[in-house]
Image (cartoon, rainbow, N blue to C red; front, side, top):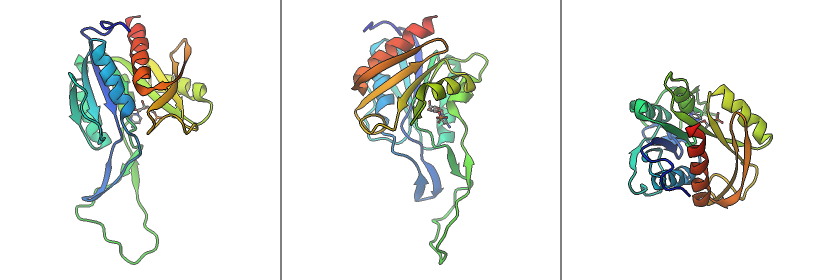
Length: 219
Ligand code: C5P
């Protein structure tokens, strides 16, 4: 592991879930633990980068020597991601952003009422990594893809559709890896290459991924 491979580089990493408020006490979210993003932040710091971690609500301490910005919703995560984007060399989107949010946030706690069925109206959230990659002076942009089948095929599609430079894909149909697990096995997909990384701890994997990202962004 080359400790200086990202020396002087500014790296932004989104991590964890987002929370989309329904009313003052309720939200829609997901089970993302943030472990992969936090491990990537640590590995990037170790490689000499100046790291900003833009994190949804998780139960993890801030990595050392790293700036952490805590956010709740996808819209807040987008705003935090774009605020200093012109200083960013490498953008890594590991957050599990909620695809939709409630159309409106009720000012007061929603009441049960007497109806057996309650309907929720949702509106699509902005795509954070695609917004970053759509910029004229875009940083080297890395996304994640969680798939249950045809992992490489969907990753390649996402790579071009979102204008990314690299996709880290994992097969979430396997229960031993991904989301809340401490381990992960991924496939790294670039525009001209597919590389499988074997099952290992998220920590080890993060070091390897940072090495691969450093090598790619030099080109
Ligand atoms: O389209 P899909 O959600 O599968 O794409 C996953 C990738 O896109 C991840 O890198 C995730 O962090 C990013 N993403 C995002 N903003 C969204 C949805 C996904 O940055 N609203």
